Amino acid sequence: MTPTLTALLCLASDFLPGTLPKPTLWAEPDSMIALGSPVTIWCQGTLGAKEYRLDKEGSSEPWDTQKPLEPGDKAKFNIPFVTEQNAGRYRCSYHSPAGWSERSDPLELVVTAPYGELTLTALPSPAVISGGKVTLQCGSWLEFDKFILTKEGEQKFNWTQDSQQHSYRGSQALFPVGPVTPSHRWMFRCYGYQRNNPWVLAGPSDLLELLVSGSSRKPSLLSPQGPVLALGQNLILQCRSDVGYDRFALSQEGGRGLPQRPGRQPQAGLTQAEFPLGPVSHSHGGQYRCYGGHNLSSKWSAPSDPLDILIAGQIPDTPSLSAQPGPMVASGEDVTLLCQSSRRIDTFLLTKEGATDPPLRLRSKYKARRYQAEFSMSPVTSAHGGTYRCYGSRSHSPYLLSLSSDPLDLSQGAGQGGWNETWVDLRGNVMRLRVEDRGPTPPPPDVSFSESEPPSVPAPHPQVLTQWVMEAVTLIPENLPYSSQSYAQYRGEGSAPQRTREQGGH
Image (tube, rainbow, N blue to C red; front, side):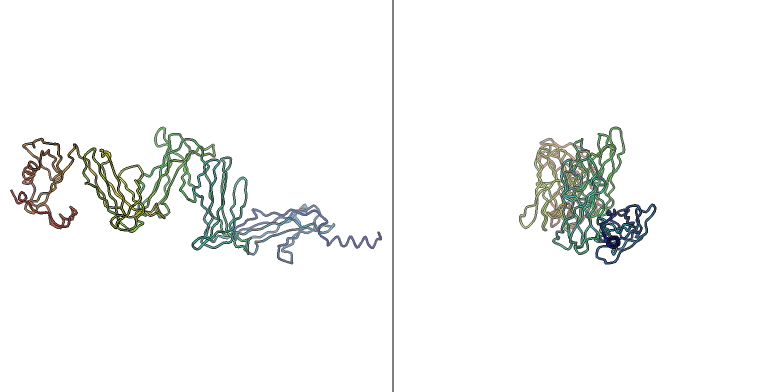
């Protein structure tokens, strides 16, 4: 080879890339960076490099050039405030006396922007049994072409799915996840983006962590306020156990979060945690479960029994509640509580004041131009006594209820005859007597009477009852308020009662 040819080849090597090892390119603190945040891009080559060059895909000119830092094997490119224009794919190279290096592998700088209000939910719940699977739903009211699910913490990964359009405005994507194990934490966020700009992501969503449950003894979950609440009412749920768990977690079916609280010991042998959920809104309606866990384990207990929280007053309707044959029933007899409405109701719910059991539910039937459900109680015992109310719900929103019916007091009488009601009127004064029938026992000679508490006196047959009523009526004060209208309203009748011969005075 002639000296002239050798010189030409050496000169050409200064301009031909690939004659030196390719450098390494990375970003700190991460290649996914929030809009407005600083980021540093590093390019590391070999010792003796004289210059580093950063190129952005789509641009014919170098994005930036930098002199190397000591000892000369790397350079940094600072972006103090990231914009959407900084998003894209980058490569770097370096120049040394031997020429230009091969270009680095690409670095994808992704910029996230807080718009779109992305939501990430777990279906059916963020609590999953060990070895089970769950579907994560990422959605937004904006129409995105694609969604990205990222797993944070240990074993990071990204997963991209095409968007599925909602029936209403917006978009979503479903990500099946599992099987999950308690060996590490399962924490996720999601993002959305347009196909023509994959380097700018909307988001992120709030962090969603899955709870991996096991088989240790389940805690119990209760609502001190009862299962039915009104809008604005404060809701506090209590999770408790006698196992001695250090912490508790609460999940809502289809919920986005999984709040956790440390356990406390209100009494020996019992630990519990309270979850204040604040003033009730529509979103609080749903099914809840809670879990117990120990501080030194990532595994949780079996789930508690489900607790339904129902929000009243969300359907503009007030059903009626009545008892057949009546609200006073003898022990051992049958009674049916009838809940009905003239508006469409899919399911009726019956609640008892002070009861800890969930409401009774029955599908409605359409009869005589009314929606109704019959709640049968047979045979009646003292446990059935109390104040009842009924509500209606619709299938598309089963946790949102109608207004409450008027309360119905169900009373149990002693003996086979039960209770009878007698209304008497004397000189414009009205009084209700409640009489217990215990068979043909003659009435006592003396009958005491209190205005605040109706008398209860055995009466063998109607003639004796009438005589007893006449004696008691003479003790009624004359200043009790009475009108035929109020009397009819109280009795639920259309007109005032007929005056009988015995009611005319004594």
